[in-house]
Length: 448
Image 1 (cartoon, rainbow, N blue to C red):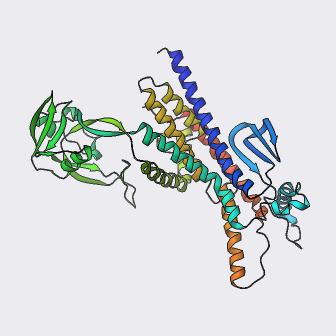
Image 2 (tube, rainbow, N blue to C red):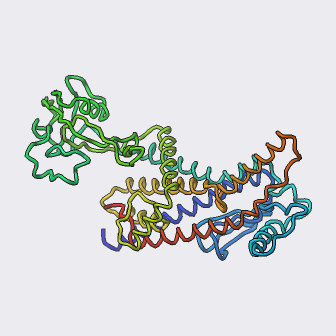
Image 3 (cartoon, one colour):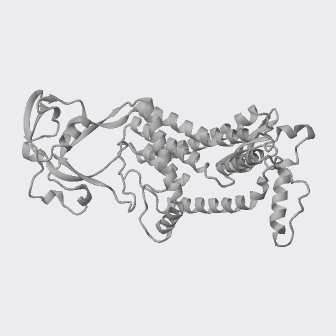
């Protein structure tokens, strides 16, 4: 293919990322919109993006539209903030600015409420309904992620090891020493080389027992360090038996998703000693059962959660990668720009089959939805998790009042969280700007 076609494919990949992001945001807001409508809350606006409105159309009592900056979305519900408690005096002095900001937000939330619509306000809903509405967005992203993972795992399939030899290792090198040893100069050949194993050999039996697949072969070899094995291979249509004695080798311990298992304290990879023969096998796509998508999503949610918990440290790493010349962590966070760039690289890589490119792009979009869903559950306003936390606090206040036979408390005044909302918003915008900059000057190279 010509360079022009590669550039066009790169652009197509970026467009796919943008479309996927917009669709994910739109569905996230649908996750809020549908329960809000079911609970009779009036929703004046459903918008994708921020800034100037590019297009809008009113359907019923809701205006649906697109805005210029496609980096988010929102639905507006009447009564997001409750009215001021009776008898509450306005703040003054050094808190005048904050008080003005709080009251302006409260007024904007309540100015369009007609007297007959008080029962349709968000603040007037039972706690459980508020929780359903605010959790609907993140839940929609996680459901979408499961669907996308399901398409890849059960549709395209994932690469699994076969029992056919692809290449041989020339010598035995521990995984935690691979950067220190030159395999081309080793004096002792690997057991596979010493036994005469060849690329293309298909392992059919070990010690006369028919193997059931690569996990069977791998487990048998790993448990047989120093024990001679009679490995029967199919070579050129005929069976050949080779005597192989697995050497003792140190390897990283991995979970069912091939991720390295780390020590609890130091964070270093755990290793173990196993039998080692020294050959690599071919990889083929195999379809997985639907339960695998659910299990993988759960595991990935945990990984995203760990990234969020360590975000201050990762922000420092991103700063160093952008301004101090530090190496970029390929497993670290990235912005939408980084995701778009990777999607473009995958789409333009002509050496990868079209099906594999499509599966990779779908995986990226699924991962993006997990990140959107988990990020929005952080219990800080303006994120959905902040509204969820406020509803839970309100519910606990009412529960304890009822438990101790006290009068029902007034509405939990979420408007007073506006200063926190502003601080969090500024921090999120600053972090986004940093990540975008680093993705431009020091991007993750997905195909390297």
